[in-house]
Amino acid sequence: MTNSSLSRAIAVRALDELVVLSGETAVPKFIRFFFLQQIVEDKAFANMLRDQANNPRSCIAKLHVMICEMEAMDDRLAVFDSLKCLKESKQDENNKLKSLSDMNAQTEEAIRLKEGHMDVMDLEINY
Image (cartoon, rainbow, N blue to C red; front, side, top):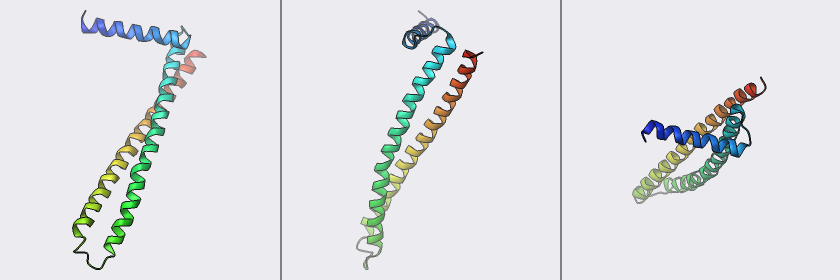
């Protein structure tokens, strides 16, 4: 079996499963069902990303306090290495937070796109 015929067989099986799951045989209706499933999964993923972003936020706040306290010390030379390590850790946490925020923005955009696809399917269903 060639790659193209294997891909076609997989696609046909996936469409058959969608028909069974959605209980619909009209193409726009089961495709709409597919997008609805994806939106639900993407929203759950976005919620998880938002929850995970709380970890670096909390860590950044703690690191900020420690950095401020060390910078206020009289003998900054004695804490130079510790201060440097704390600042590097804070930067790492900021990078994590930025990555999570970027991924969340991409997920939110994907949700909007799929909602648009559902609108197209609704128009076709009601046509």
